[in-house]
Amino acid sequence: MSSANSNIKNLTEGPLVPKIFQFIIPIMTMNLLQNLYNAADMVVVGYSGVEGALGAIGTTAAMNNFFLNIFIGFSIGANIMVSRHVGAGSERATREAVHTAICVNAILGVVIGALALILTPSILRMIGDEGEVLRLATTYSRIIFCGALFSSLGNCCINIFRGKGDSKTPMFVMIGSGLLNVALNFFFVLVCGMSVDGVALATVISQFCSAAIMLWLLHKDQGWTHLDFKALKITKGSLHNQLSMGIPSAIQGCLFSISNMLIQSSLVSLNNQYYPGGSAIIDGNAAGSSLESFLYTCAFSCNQAAVTFASQHVGAGKYERLRRVRRNCLFIGASLSMSLALIMLLFKEGFVSLYVTEPHAMEAAYVRMRIMFSTYFCLAAMETMSGFLRGLGKSLLSTINSLIGACLLRIVWITVVFAAWPSLESIYISYPISWALTAILSFLAGEKILRRMEKTYGEETRPAKGE
Image (cartoon, rainbow, N blue to C red; front, side, top):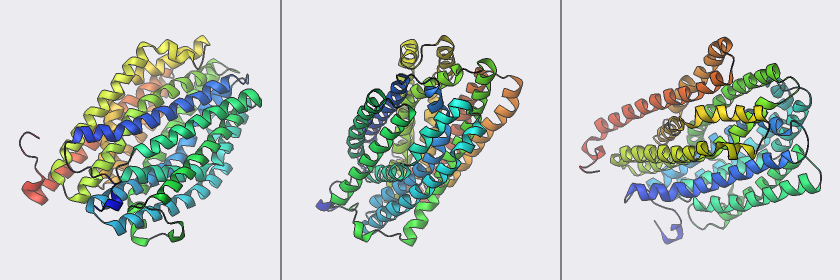
């Protein structure tokens, strides 16, 4: 690669483990800090004195993630194609992928944001929100969706950077925007006397800043991923490739969110049954979910590593290293996830008390943590194998596995098991079972693809002894 393109990292040569760690540590750091900032949203909104504010934000998570996953899915398509073109050494195709991705995500941000603004109240009512919780949740979500364009472009830029092997630049940008988010949280809530509207406005402003900075950095980049605003256009071939990877990824994320909305509705029904007029269960679930987001950073980081490393290796035709990519990402993801889970379980009382202090709400959070945190290696395996399949170019297959192993299973579980055994335990047990089943399906599918590659490409795909 030319000196002008020295900022692109070749991930297909040399020892894999150090490269994977160098790649995922910035992603983990960025997401851990981002989750810390999101947790600050929930902690700070508790200082507003508005009853139900914490639970209201918690009930919006599945719905907000439904729309966010559309942006993330299409952005992953950009990651895969940029990685593949970099691995193949194609400057022209890399530039086309960058400009097409920016255009597509800008359009998506506007369209999805407008659609979400219209549908928000109806979706929240379907989940079970009512009264003051519904009003607060609607206010929060609608402000968040006003920044959909910034969220879409920001996710796109992050994945373009990762596609060329650079996970550090997005980390530094997100650290800065996250600090701004926290500062604005305190300003809007404590100084201006706002509540959920204040933390939502702080999020939108920080998203705008991070997207603007990353677009500017891509514009200043003189390598293959240089963004020329005057040359922005959608290239047909690049669009087709990104859509073929991005649409299944977006569908998969949306299906997960739909199943989670069903679970959220079940939680709200339990809350209304046992605590009418209160919010103990939804507050406790919101606290447990926020803490779980810190664990998810480990699994998500290895998912991104599996996508990028597998894509570059396929693009470079280095199929013989793919098994090692899979094995190392699986081991690192499971190890990091369970290490952090153990720490959080040992000190769960202290962590939960940062969010809620009401005894019933705390117990609801403990139930979620005991069941889900102790089995988080299953989630890490599911995410890693899903990313690996996408890196192999089998995004649709990854979506089908997730549809069968996670989404449909959760829907059946809530319809059958929860109906017969309506409890927090019966809801949360569905998660690790669906994680494990999806991970197994994806592993078997990946193994079949690798064996087919060995048969097609012969000895060059088989690892040497000692590897």
